[in-house]
Image 1 (cartoon, rainbow, N blue to C red):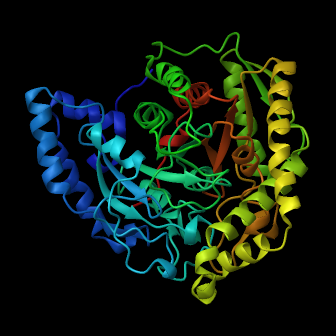
Image 2 (image 1 turned 60 degrees about the vertical axis):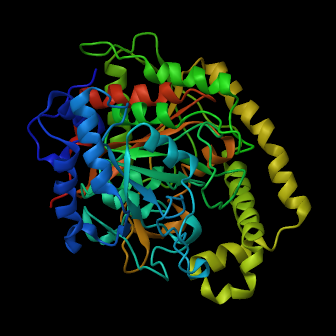
Amino acid sequence: EYTPCTDAALHDFGVLDLLTAYADGTTTPTAMLAALRARWADPALVGGAILAVVDGANEAAADSDRRWRDGTARPLEGIFFGVKDIVDVAGAPVTAGSHTTGDRIADTDATAVARLRAAGAIPVLITATTEFACGAPHNARYGAVTNPWDRSRWTGGSSTGSAGALAARLVPLALGTDTGGSIRVPSALCNLTGIKPTYGLVPRTGVASLSWTLDHIGPMARSAADLRVVLDVLAGPDGLDPAAAPDAVARQVQAGLAEPGTPGVPSLAGVRLGVPTTWFTELCDAGVLAAWEAAVAALRGLGAAVVPVDIPDAHRLHDDVTLVLTCELAANQEGALDRFAQYDVGTQVRIARGLVPSAVDYLRSLRRRAGAQRATVQAFDAAGVDALVTPGIGATAARLSDVTVEIDGARHPMQSIVGRNTGLFDYLGLPAVMAPAGFVDGLPVGVQIVGRPWADDTCLRLAQVLQTVTDVHERRADG
């Protein structure tokens, strides 16, 4: 059950909080926009997260005010959102964080942006990304995005600015993309909730491609309840993305998302949750593991049964996702390779890696995917589980000074850790939610809830149940 926030500052209101406040007349979209604009003007709060402010917000907010007054409000009326700089917003600069794209202005809205607009939401910020969603933390064109929880650390990538903007209360909602963990990693490291939907549930039309068989677009917010109402708006084929889910499948997912929760303390009696015994629990800081165990204990305390489940051949799948991602990146960037020096070092390394494997290597990694998906669903079936609950990212946010993370006192290169627990599910295409799970030395860590294909609502409901009986997600960075 959702309980609206009523006594916080306006900028602390989430999506459902705002819809409730607009409906009962305690505030207006115009007032909310003014509160947010005051924060956008403070560089200490922005921390590199904002690349541009989208034109037309004042007029759109005034229209939303009118709609709330005259009873014609749409499902997300007056909800302001940020958009990652690889997702097109008509008339706004969208550069994929790269020198190679020049001063590009998007002609039309991406499908996801158009759907949010049609539901009454208002795009207001273009938020930073690593270059083409895969470059280095220190972006060559715009610089780094600092983490509101500790400005000497990174937000995590590649949805860097969307995470920074949400954590600093610059917007209540943002769009991110996830090819190896780029929604879930910064969600874990910034105390946010984000979902990588089932592959194909949300069309990627108007989104710059990193790796077309792995790319996902999804919402990031500060609660699972907020994500459910937003994902309902985003889901369904658009007739343009060839990987989009069939309409009947999307409608089934949407039906689940639209169902109201049950009032009172939730019960998970009859729910079975899988927990991993290998891979996901390796290369994890003890504090991350403790936060995961506490989240599992909270769910068990509500009646869920907890049983061991492992993803078959996780190590090989991790290698496969790396190979597919780098090869498809290299193919996508082939037309700009004469300007290779303009890419930042992180993108250069990944493109170079993608040029090495043979066509046979790439196709082998692609061909294994269907079998891996089958084997994973069979592992869920054999254990009779509704979802898998794993530790989130194995460490807290990376230091920007040396781009390392700490696990039990030892420093590790960030790239060897951050995508380890997330990338497998881009390859498998399964829905995966990252939710706040606790803090290690004052820095956020997450827990990941993974479902069967099209069980997006199951994952979000479990995260929402967790957020009903814990308050970790309500903690905010200072400022």
